Length: 118
Image (cartoon, rainbow, N blue to C red):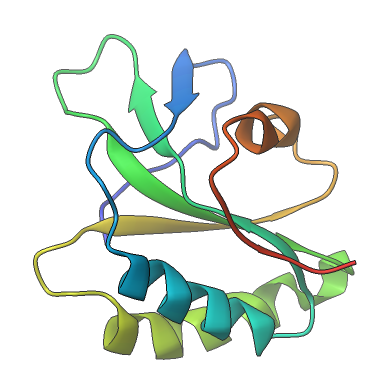
């Protein structure tokens, strides 16, 4: 996983569709993982670029959890499972957020949906 943080919301972040095609098998495996973790309500895999940094854009797997009290449980469970899903040559940061996350609508607008639960 890449060391990505968006804790400082005041930074200038650009969210978009991945610049390189993500293999369908990987999306299917991530989607299955999300489906098996009940508190995850939404999952997205956009590419995120922080303006002003020389680092290239990176994939960030956003997991929207409800209720918020389950965030730590989801984080631990995803940490256990994600290593078996991701190819060794692919770096994806994982962010567990709640529905009140300030950048969530921007992430939704990328339409990079991996999973959704009503």
